[in-house]
Image 1 (cartoon, rainbow, N blue to C red):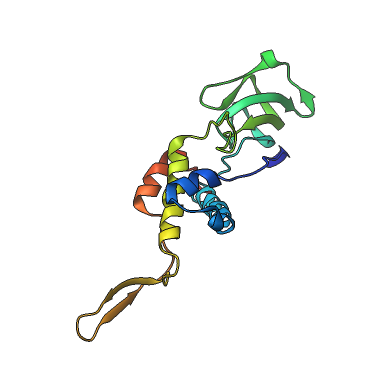
Image 2: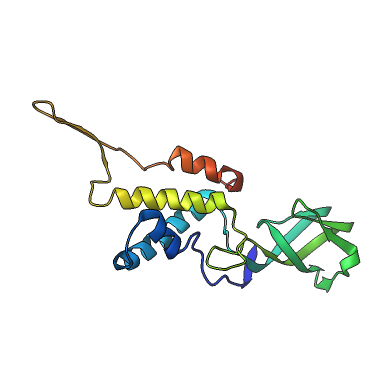
Length: 193
C-alpha cells in the first residue's frame, strides 16, 4: 500500500510554452491546450501504470515471510527518508538503497515494514527538470495527434469517394500509437490483473 505524504503540485508531462512552440499555435488556444496537456499526461500515466512526478510516499509491506529485499513500487527513487519495521525506525546502517531502487536490509525481517521515500521525476515546468526527454516527446506526439484531428469524427477510420463512396469506422478502443508506445516502453510498469 502506498500513502502519498507530499503530493506533486502537478502531473503535466510538458508545458504550455513547449506545446505552443511545437504546434505553432497562439495564446488564444491556451485554455484548450492546457486541457489537452492534462488529458494526454493522464493518458500516458495510465498507459505506463505509474506516477511520473516526484512525490514523497510511504510504502507499507506486510511481510509474512522473512526477507531482506524490498522492491519499491515507484521509481526512480531519489531518497529514502526512513525504514520502519513493526513500528521501530531502523538505523541507516541497517539498510541501503541499491541503484536498482531496491531497499536491501542488513537482516531478513518479518512483519509490517514502512519505507518513507521520494521517487519520480522533476517535471518540465521546473528549471531543474529530470523527466526524460522521450517521455515529454511522447506527450508532444499525442498532443500533436489530438490537435491535428480536432473537428474530425474520432471513429472514422477511412473514407473513399469514388463514385458511390465508402466509409469505415473504428470499432472498440483506440490503442496507443506504435511510435508513442515505443518511446514509453522503458517506463511502463507491469499491471496486476
